[in-house]
Amino acid sequence: MILVIAIALWAVEIYIRNHTRELMSEKDLEKIFQDKVDNEVKIEPKDWMPDAYRKTLVRQISQHAHSEVVGMLPEANWITRAPSLTRKVALLAKIQDEAGHGLYLYSACETLGVERDETIEDLHSGKAKYSSIFNYPTLTWADIGAIGWLVDGAAIMNQVPLCRCSFGPYSRAMIRVCKEESFHQRQGYSIMLKMAQGTAEQKRMAQDAINRWWWPALMMFGPNDSDSEHSAQSMKWKIKRFSNDELRQRFLDMTVPQCHLLGCEVPDPDLKFNEETGHWEMGEIDWDEFWNVVKGNGKCNRERLRARKGAYDNGEWVREAALAYAEKKRKRKAAAAA
Amino acid sequence: MSSKKNWPLWEVFIRSKAGLNHRHSGSLHAADADMALEMARDVYTRRNEGVSIWVVESNNIHASDPDAKDALFDPANDKIYRHPTFYELPDEVKHM
Image (cartoon, rainbow over the protein chains, first blue to last red):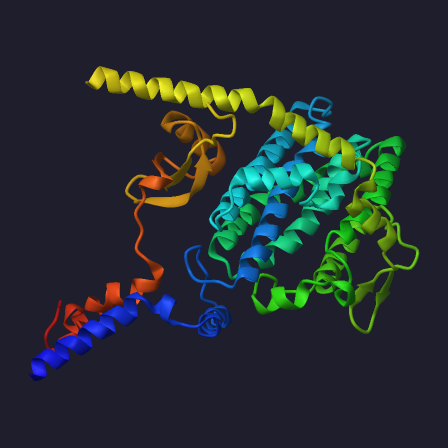
């Protein structure tokens, strides 16, 4: 008798263990999820997660992926006109890395159950955004230096904390991206150094590039904390670790001395060093310009989207042909084996 | 053929140097195994990260259910005698 009861209890226990998810309320599941996040346990794709967490990640990771891919366009403008073979291969390698980073991120996004095509369609329809910085044109070779130094510098500042993001696949993708990206910033700064130490005309080009890229780079950290709508929730979920303004301040403190080392000026008349706090203090960002570019009215928004859509549409026959060829090979192999 | 058919998803495993296991690196889309290998080289080994690559179509991977992990791994939880520290021996015993 006792044995029968023991077996029955054991069976019930096994059943409960195997059906935990169905037997628990949404609230319980949410608590388990948040406990994991609070204890720095990574969330993996098949684990239970709140719908809003999944949606936030899909939005953020796919837009991050789009930014990597669209980010190739302004730089690609200078591959054929790089001033030396060394600079050309370095720029090619950097751009190839950006393609790779886009692919790591699309893969991370797909683990959340979205098809890659859907995310790409959202980019093409304008529903999904990408970093606004890539809607500015690259007018001279010095822009390539300024992008590597300032734009990749700001991106690294944003991405390093994402290596500790609560979602496993995103965190792992970011670790790989950050490892590769430090070369990008160094190659950019090395271009700037060369230009800044060059002829008066080259120096002028360097300063001109800084003038045009400085403020958009600072905008890359997003709206001020007081106006940032998704921030608090993302912090609680540990997708985000530091606020926009905190990261912007760190970037400013690191970058101002680098600019001075070039012998160039920071295009901010209000910039000053606060001896008491040990921090640089900047002037007001022109948020009207920021939102205007986000809304699609930047100098290159239309051109960038046209280039991406063109690449996708013109590649369609290649994707189809590759599939047809794979199918033909598979059939041949099967026939030979039969 | 439908024009919307996508290239299948592949999981990529890389052996970073001789003597080590292949480890999961990530995934990618490719039309077939040959293309998946070449793409894996370009996406995951641009800085000499590997000496060998495996690719497996993702739908051939079978995974345990994360919700059943307690029950699945339960048998190992109460077997401390599988660990060397379970056995107390006098200090005089050397080389063990």
